[in-house]
Each structure stands twice: as C-alpha cells, then as structure tokens.
Length: 115
Length: 113
Image 1: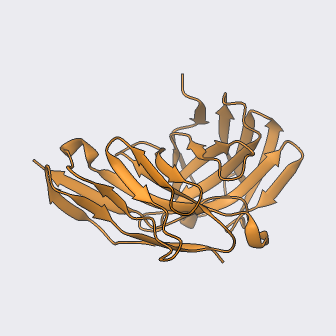
Image 2: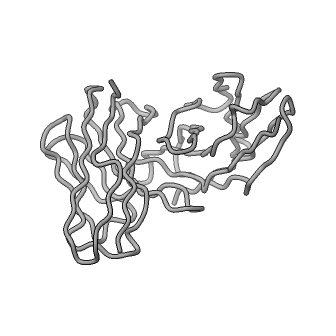
C-alpha cells in the first residue's frame, strides 16, 4: 500500500535559517505529491505540488522536487520567517493498485521559527 | 466566503449519542472526502464520494456513515459516538483530474465524553 514518511518534529530554527523537511514515500503506480501546511487552529492549505518525476513545485519561497529514483519530495526554503511556524504535511495521491482515492499523509512536522 | 465550510466548528457530545457533521462546498467539485486527524498521526481517510451516487469507504470507516445529499453537500454521521472518536474532522473536495489537489475545510473539533 501507499505510505509517506516524514521527519519527526518539532523542528526549531532561527529566523533566516535554511529549512529542509525530509519526505519519502512508497506508492504503487505514479503518484502525485503534495505539501500541505496547517497553521494553528486552521485547516490544511495546499503549499505546493508536483505531478510527475523531476517536477519542482514552488510557492511562497518553498520548493520541493519530485525525485522518483530516491522516492523523495523534500521541502526546502532558503530563509525562514517566524510566520512560517506551522505543521507541514507531506502527502501523496495515487489511483493505481485499486486503492482508495484519497490523500495518504505523513504524520506531520511541527516547525517552530524563533526570532 | 470560504470555498469549503464545515458545521459545527466545535462539538461536545456524550458516549452513545448520534451526531452529524456537515460539509458544504462552492468549488463545483464532484469529489468530496472526510478525514480525521489525531495528534501525531496525520490525517486518515474515512469516506470519499466521486459523485452523488458513488460513495466509498476509506481506511477507517468503521463507526461512521456518510450521506451525499447533493454535489455540494457531504455529511458525516457517528451513529453511536465513542470516546476514541474524539478528533479533528476535515472535509475536502477535489476535481476529477488525476493528480488534482484537494481543498480542505476549516475542520470540526469533536469531543466525545
């Protein structure tokens, strides 16, 4: 079946630091990959996505590249801000293999940015 | 106005009670989903619907039922609530296109005593 593994948190960084949150996946077929962000007390917002190998998703300074050879989709940002503090979820969506049509999520990584 | 709305936003109920959580969307999407979120576990799929006549179980459907009243409305029911159904519940929608993103509502926080 499908699964997503992302680094455990919390991850605590200083403002302007470089961010990497690792995400690896197992899936049948050719999944689409997503990063969602959840701010305190809110729902999930789509941050970025990639639908095929070597695609790079980007938004608000965040980037992630779909690496089929390493089954990874690591999230990066060059200079984080306090407002980036949130929980980040890596997810995949794959129709192949007869599985359910829904997103398979990682457990989430809580990011804390200190001024 | 929000594209995906959920009511209520917070609910406290007692063991054995029947409750319904409602979701409405204005995005015009055919596909709708219900997830639950537990601390440290990410989100898990409860039910999903391709259209009004097509409803499917997700990975954790036991103890839940759903109703797709219209393209825009998808309700989740707990027939007899139990404490381990205490969680944050999210509704989501998506287009039919392969690889399409899902759009989430703000969530309903449910506490079963």
